[in-house]
Amino acid sequence: MSEVQFNNQLTDQINVSPEAVRQLLALTESEEGVNGVRIFVSGGGCGGMSYGMTFVDQPTEYDCVLDRDGLKVYVDAVALSYLEGVEIDYQSQGANASFVFKNVFANTGGSGVCGTCGAAGGGCG
Image 1 (spheres, rainbow, N blue to C red):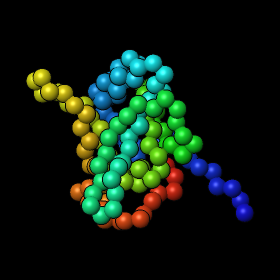
Image 2: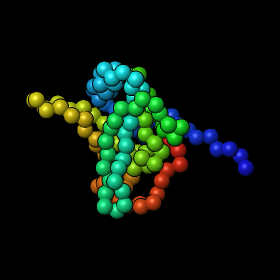
Image 3: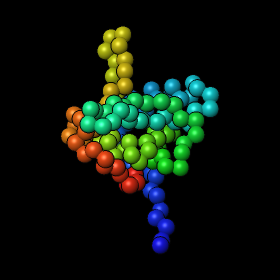
Image 4: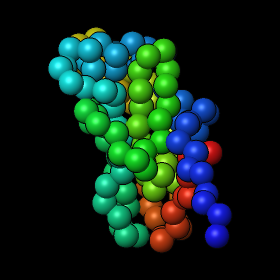
């Protein structure tokens, strides 16, 4: 049996806008010991999925990484199977500012409802 090499470098599977990169870099640089941000998927079953972001101090061996202008964005291979094609932007309107996820769950029909229960990806690229 030959050993399969795990490709952990993301290229265009996830898109992060320049403004989102700037804002995330500012947040990660203000926190001590933070290596980047993680995009994650939670929930499950056919009732729907949700997503979020958190700081990463140490990536895992199963993380895929997107490196944009010094910002490291980590996604594990299973979450990537749901988030491939997502676009992360940062928008401000008046006093409100937030990160916006566009095209979320494109691989499951774009609605967040489970269209491929039990399906999981096998790598990042």
